[in-house]
Image 1: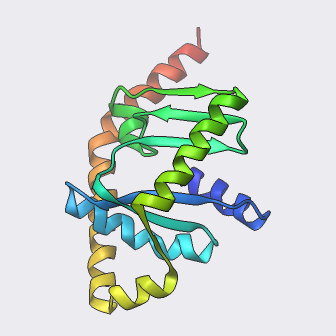
Image 2: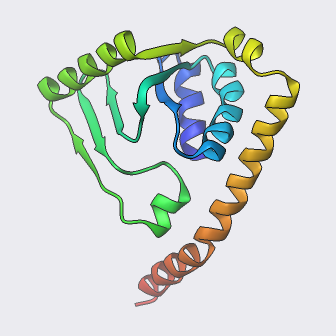
Length: 163
């Protein structure tokens, strides 16, 4: 949730945000849940592009051609509390600009832009209701799968404070 709030604030400040998301998914439930969030994305003036060539699992981000991050970290509680994930952050302009150019090339050649109008045409009320149900199921599963790890993490942090 925190990432979404930061993205919304940045978009309100005029920062142009482009998301390249999977168009093809090996986890259909997760893809429907993700598409439920598209309406929030559109309300916040964030552009959506779906990668069409294959299943997409990469996580790459750039910021103003000055910073880049690459890795396996999903922005969710499973990655934060239950999985071993790693990203490499690089603050070097030549590298970050190269990554930004590559992302723009992928957007131009291998992605389809999804607009709010496209979304409304493709997904009627029943499909959007199904997406919402998928989103809620994913939220519950994430909560259940990470509850123990969060408790353990908080206890460890609390114990460290009292040393």
